[in-house]
Image (tube, rainbow over all chains, first blue to last red; front, side, top):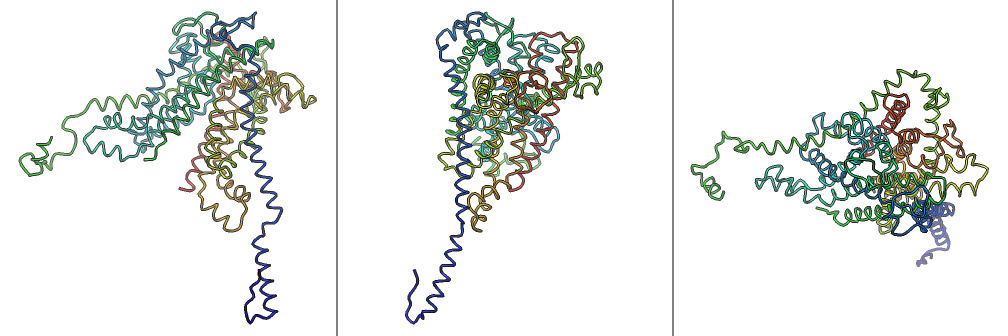
Length: 313
Length: 320
C-alpha cells in the first residue's frame, strides 16, 4: 500500500514505495530456513516428550499384558512355588511388605518430621554443626540404596544391633534409606509457612513449641504428608538393600515381624524374574502390576495432595 | 491477665520493672527437652553417615590387608569367590560405566529436550498435566524396569539389530535402556526447574533483538541454566552408577572390561547384590570384598554428588 498524497511526484512515490518494501522485507527477515528449523525443533521436542511418556507407559502396559494370564485371587492368597508357576502367588511377600512399611512409618514419621522441625525452627545456621547436618542430609539422599543394604548388614543385622535377618532389620534399613527424603520434603513444607504466622502466635504469648505444634505443623501437614507418601512408595518398591538384609530367603510361610525369615514384594518379583522359565516371568509381571497399582495410586494421591493444598499465603 | 494489663496501663503498682528483662518468669524446661529431642532426630542423619563410613571402613581395611592396592586397582581377572581369587576391580568399574554410559546416551537427549519443551514451549495446561505424570512415572520400582528390560527391551533389540548382541538375552544395552527410562524423569524435572529459574527479562531481551523462539530456547535459556542442567546430568549419572536391580536382571553378570553395548557385563552394584544374598560368613575374603567394592562405589557417588551440589548452589546464586 503506497500513500498517494497530493503534491507527491512520481519520483518520491517510487522512493517511498522502495523504502517501504525494504523495511517490510527486513522486518519479515526471519528467513524461511529459520521457520523450518523452528518447526523441526518443535517436532523434536514433542518426539522426546512422547518417547519419555510412552517408554514409561510401555512398562506398565507390557507388564499388564505379560502378567494377564496370572491375574486372579491366587496371586494374593497363595505362597511362592518352585514347581507350579500357575499356582504361585505373593502372600508371604505381601505380608512381609506390610510389616516393613508399618515399621518404616513408625520410625520415619516422628524422626523425619522432628529433624525437619529442628532444622527449620530451632537450628542457628551460623553454627557449623547445623550446617554439617544439612550438608550431610543432602549427601545421604544421593547414596545408592545398595550401600544402605551394606549398612544394614553390618550394623543392624550383625554388629551393634545384631537383630539377625528379621523383618524389623529390613524396616530399619529402609527407614534410614528414605529418611533424607522425608526430612527434605518436611523442611520445604515447614519453610512455606510464612514467618508472620509464627510472629503472631509468639506475640500472643505462645511459647516456641506451642507455636510449632498449634500453628506451624497444622499448616504444613499437606506438604509433609506428600513427602511421607512419596517416601513410603519408594520404600515399597526398593529391593536392592533388602537383598542384603535377609529378604532374599525363600519363604513359603507367613512371616513374623520379629523372628524368622521374611520376604517382600519387590524381592519376590525379582526371584521369580530370575528363573529361566518364562512361566515364572509371567508371575513376576503379574506381581509388578499388583505393586504398580498400589504405588501409582499412592504417588498420584501425594501429587494431587500437594497441588490441591499448595497455598499462597 | 486482663487485670494485669489494666494496672500496667494505668501505671499502677504492677508497672513493668525496667530492670526485669522480658523473659519468662520461670524457666521452661519442657521447651528445652523438646528442643533436645528434635535435635536428636536431626543428629540421627549424622549417625547414619558415620555408621556407613565405619561399616565400610573396617572390612575394607581387612580386605587391603590381604589384597594389595595394585592387585585391586588393575585390569586383572575379577574372580573374588574362586579358590585362586583375583581382584581386578577395573573390570566391574568399566562394566558399571558401560551400562551408565548407554543409559545416559538415551536419557540425556530425551530428558533435556523434554525439559526444554516443558519450560519454554508447553502451554501451561499441558505442563500442569505432563509434569505430575512424569513424577508419578518416576515412582515405577526398579524391579519393574528390570523385568521390562529382560522381557521386552532385550528381545526387541535382538530383533532389530541381531548382529549387535553377543550374549543374548543379557547385555549392557538392554540394562542401559532400562536405567535410561529411570533417569529421564530425573533429568527432565531438575533441568526444567533450572530453566524456569532463568528470569523472563533475558528471554524478552532476546525476542526484542529479533531472536526466534528456537534461538531463545537454545542460545539464551539453555546456556543460562547450564549449571543446573549439568547438575541434573551428574545426579542422573550417580543414580545410574548406583542402580542395582535393573543390572542384576538384565546386564548378564560376566566381568568384561568393555563398553560394547552387546556384551554381558558385571557392575559393582550387581556384584554386591549377587554375592551378598547368601548368608556369607563374616571375616572371609568374599565378605570383605563386598565392603571394599561398596566403599569404592560410595566414594564415587559421593564425589559426583559433591559436584552436583556445588553446581546447583551456583545456579541458585546467579539470579537472586
